[in-house]
Image 1 (cartoon, rainbow, N blue to C red):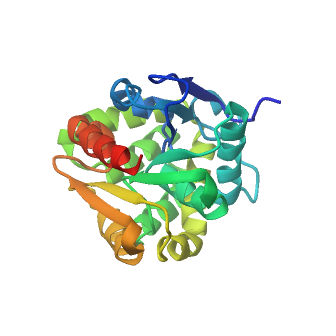
Image 2 (cartoon, rainbow, N blue to C red):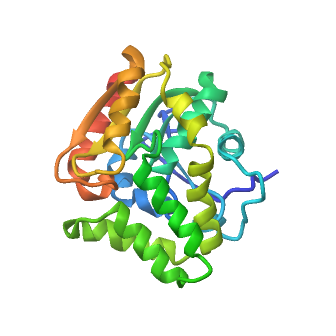
Length: 262
């Protein structure tokens, strides 16, 4: 039986090559990884998943009570369908949360975690932003609200490429789904904080943009509690969407680290 979520597999150098499962963030799609695919497929088979309400899964609506555990199990459903037993997992932004929930529920399936632009907990500025977006959703046009949220996450004009990609993908996502995903983090912030606040014996690499002012400090907090298996590289000339802002640095560092893991 085909899984609910839309996905794409990209063949690597051989059928026996290791797998990387790549999970995008809120308002995005698997297209966010387009600057990684060409280089990563030289070494790995790739599985790109579109979360509920995004990309090829855009027609799926988040039901009441939907949570990160459910999202994690939907990704594992795809992984099982493709026939992957164990893989490296790479998550961007909100995708990093889902990767961490997968590691919690299925540690034996996770070879390593690469958490890019990691969202480990929400500070008061982010929670206030989401509260205001929820409050204004019946007053402010969706297009304007999406732009305001994007501008708050990517405020620097020099990262216009990331902003453009975010807004292009966000157009394809209903605002109800988009806001539900963002508010999910707000509602489950305590659960996120608990998970990221304890050590886990899975090799974990945090990749954070030097200009990611909303989430870098919280990622450093998680790193300090992650134990000896966790490490971090801060990517220069990059904001929140660090895999787009500084593709060469991101690809070089992440591939070097992954190949050390095996």
